[in-house]
Amino acid sequence: MNETLAELGESELLRRLSHFAPPGQLNDDSAALGSDSRPMLVNTDVLVDGIHFSDVSTKPSDVGWRAVAANLSDLAASGAISVDGITVALVAPGDTPWSWVEGVYTGLRAALDEYGGVILGGDCSKGSERLLSITALGRLGPLRLHRGEARPGDILVTSGPHGLSRLGLAILQNDKALHGIPLSDALRTAAINQHQRPIPRLAALQDLLNCKPESLPWRAGGTDSSDGLLAAIQGLCSSSGCGAYLDETLLPRSKDWPTGDLWDRWCLAGGEDFELVLSLPPAWAQRWLDRQPHSRHIGCITAEHNMIRWQHSRQRIDSQGFDHFRTTQTL
Image 1 (cartoon, one colour):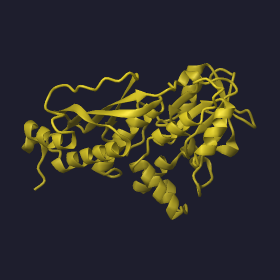
Image 2 (cartoon, rainbow, N blue to C red):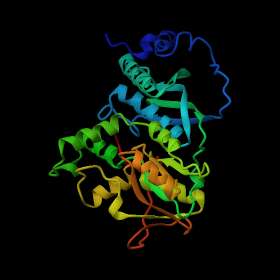
Image 3 (cartoon, rainbow, N blue to C red):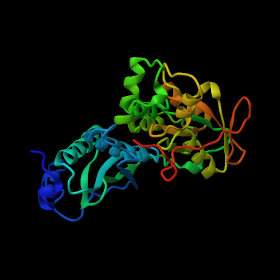
Image 4 (cartoon, rainbow, N blue to C red):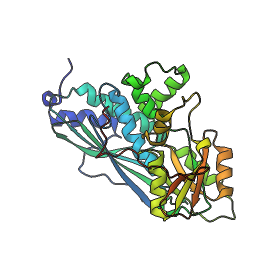
């Protein structure tokens, strides 16, 4: 029998959810964290049914995994080197099956087991739609990555290819834009995996810290590409008062990526790839590129305020990525 949340009631729901946290962790209204001399980084992301996930494209366990990955990606893009844990706020209609919630928390726990941290606490409430809000807490390492730390002359790099998550969504939805386009099995698999089980780039950040030239200060611009590659670069440029050149021959496309305007647009503005996008001094950038097999050199930072151009033609690039309040995309 697949019980609903209304049939379980709040007390039984909390009892079952407590099995996904350390023993006794959910017994009280607040959580105590151990003392630590390192500054704490805090991030919150919200996933809304129909905007960030749906039953068509995302299994419950993948909803949980993606929720953790999105938050930990933001922590990595800020310089976090360890994860204390997360709090979870769940809103769902009373007729939501317990099996769906169980799957979500299974995915949450699996991602935390993989990347660190535990469920520290949270809250549950009845609502008209399913919503999952995660707050993640991590500890800062020696480098505080800020969007506002890019400088003219820096090299723009990213930790991996872009557009895969958008392609994965299109495959799962049987998007008509893909009809008649041959896609390799490897590309299909990579795209679906990237959409359903993205990887927060904590290991790539650690490599960045390990390869800094001793002569350079701890200064780098950084963000992640949750809203798309162009949106990430625009964030760096806007916050730093700089511009950027992108090399059209170096766009971070995956192997076997098709050609054409649609495919370039998905690469530049598809969103939810959760890769690091960094502005680094040239010597540091080269060391990181040498250590990271999937990383890409994509351009450079210029002194032209808030202007992103193609490197060869100098033509301005429209820097529009995923916008939660403007998007018409459904999942």
